[in-house]
Amino acid sequence: MMVQEYDVIVVGAGHAGCEAAHAAAQMGSRVLLVTMNMQTIGQMSCNPAMGGVAKGQIVREIDALGGLSGILSDKTMIQFRMLNRSKGAAMWSPRCQSDRMRFAEEWRLALERNQFVDMWQETVEALLVKDGRVLGIRTQMGVEFFGKSVILTNGTFLNGLIHIGEKNFGGGRAGERASLGLTAQLESLGFESGRMKTGTPPRIDGRTLNYEAMQEQAGDENPSKFSYSAETQPLKEQKSCFITYTNTAVHELLKEGFDKSPMYAGRIQGLGPRYCPSIEDKISRFSDRDRHQIFVEPEGWNTVEIYVNGFSTSLPEGIQYKALRLIPGFEKAKMFRPGYAIEYDYFPPTQLKETLETKLIENLYFAGQINGTTGYEEAACQGLMAGINAHLKNHEREAFVLDRSEAYIGVLIDDLVHKGTDEPYRMFTSRAEFRLMLRQDNADLRLTEKGHAIGLASSQRLNDVLIKQVQIEKATKILEEVSIDPHEANAILQKVGSADMKQKNKASELLRRPQMDVKHLLQTSAALTDALSSFSHEALEQAEINLKYGHYLEKERAMVDKMKKLEHVHIQNRLDYEAIKALSNEARSKLIQIQPRTLGQASRISGISPADIAILMVYLDK
Image (cartoon, rainbow, N blue to C red; front, side):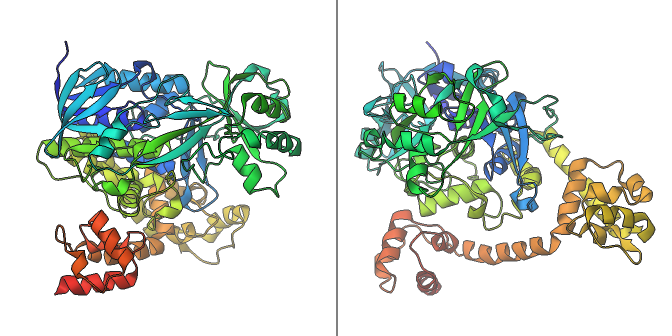
């Protein structure tokens, strides 16, 4: 029999569970990772991709702190694209198509290589709890494992119910059973729960598709990668995706099945992701549109399986099949399995502390879809933070919390624990008020030193960042000091559509022109090219961004300083909000429920007005 006492027990081996187990073990905790199926560790349950708008920023932040999602994405990607490159630097977002099977394999191998990680394949039936503290878990077979901390990352498995047309059956994922019992126990302990839903599209045999009828979507000509480390290299070969569209014939056929749709018939009670609607939703909500985009995404290098992104559905399988065959390029398509919707239990995240530890039960942490989020990246970063904080608390060290000005991860967790969510929470750049500071390109500069300080990011990673910082400073100084003659620059300026120079200008001034970047600038001056030849592309890019957006970055930093003043106004534990009669009823109720630690946190709680904050400030002053 294996060891039955651990520092950290992680329940669930999806993206959240894997990052939690890796982080805690890497920092020195003895970890037990419990999963219902060891063959699906690190499984991409939905689309075979990592990153995207705001999500790519999160993957880079995970990597900068010492997590593995970025490195494993690099090792298993089949295509890379930098989204929104035509927009400002704050919007650039890395995304990759992944080899689904290879990604899961790499996660399992990475965890197996860690001597501090043990694994156990079985369903967890109950938590062991005594005097308001979690002590461990009990499995379906009655085996008990004891741990100083337990992290629940159950994904869509808690009372999971799969819907396909008028059929429904228990399950946490296609081909896997649901997890029963934990929700009831948590409710008996005082937790509030709810129901959410998500969906997935059908999977298709790629050999039966006509790609000539579709638009090819290749990867970037010069692909980048997620990880800042030298452990991985950019792709030398890529696999294309394709784009096609639905049409009115597809829509009319799908409408025939609406009366058998579990969503329209009211059999699904949970709320679904507003920003990733099913094809039924799209047809109903956007009835004025006669077509919707479909992304045809390969699932790996050596498989013919295709993910039909944009066609998420829970309609009867026969209707799905007939409708798919009306899409250009899908006329002879064969289906591997139909799309489906899945309902599952979640626990409103306002029941958590900023460390993701629950307020009701000490040393119990929630991470991932159990908190009402959707997406691999959102789950992974929560798992990372829960694993870090479980380890730190066990060793009586200060909690690790990122604020909204430090990381998208900080924005996500702050939103969850102070605002809550009644629909699957997905990260967007618009959620971050300081997004110019929180770019994908500078996550290592923002976070690697913090990751190293807690014992997660390696010394080599920190050293790389320090070298990069020195290069950025030197490159910036050169750009501010070197002058460029008009006769050198005007040919390039005309080429990019910028006005001619009349007199000498500093390279930095030239770089601030919207049409100019470092690549163009280096073509204007041999002396400048020589001066910057020893600097990395990443350091030059940082220098360029800092010069172009310096004024806006200063304004953001000033706003951060202003907001932090509220963060320094602390609220005593269990303040008697009932005694503050001037507060609105809603504010009083929310403050009692969430128990913010600072005035800044209180100001971000949904339903609390500036007037309530002013009243609270006066009360605290007294």
